[in-house]
Image (cartoon, rainbow, N blue to C red):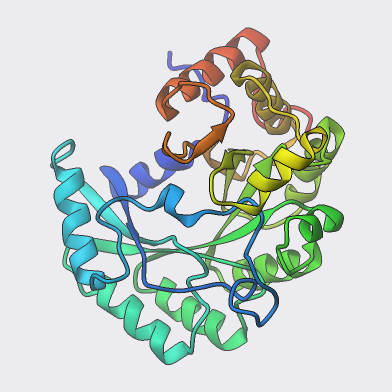
Length: 308
């Protein structure tokens, strides 16, 4: 008898949908963000250095097709039989005129091995015209819109220079999901001034939203960011968890999370040349194995304390 999974694993959901392994290919299409170019602010989010999650093949000087080809060649070495999704990841991937966005997305979808799109963006960078277009597109291929939420606390959002409030995120998620579009959210656990209770409140709030999936990341301090400078001058603002402490926080969060929301990841891993703290020395799969073992030790599961 197979044991029931202790959380809803989004990667398994994808595998079931496509009937084989699914690999995202990161694409840098040369976008910027409204809190970088001056329309809402300068400097970007205080924690952000986009170089930390751009693969070597992912350069905006290359065409979309070139990046897809190089990504496929890179991942084909490990897995021959798999489906590919074009992942528009760097910066804000809806921050342009709709005709330009359509051209970029169409180029990605024209590749015969690309089965769909994952588009990372901000909740203040979508509108009805764009969401209506996405609704039509989602009827033709796999489509996920991932919103950077990061926190549900407006004071934290202001502190990290997001340039929008939580109400904006709620509206964008509802407007997207109401059109039948798969909708994801990114959250950072352990932001400055957010204690355990604040983190658990995020789980309560997010569980009320029509999310398809969620990504959880530990706070990482990386070089070349405003936050790296803040940590030098005001170290008391920060709490750096050990891997074991963060695992228990992630599980506490999971226990409060709506079991219908699939979890895509619990942790992120910045390249060592950028990472300042925390240094756990764990690969993502090693971390997940530890978390799953801890779930068994605590005999708990996603949604254990969730109340509709």
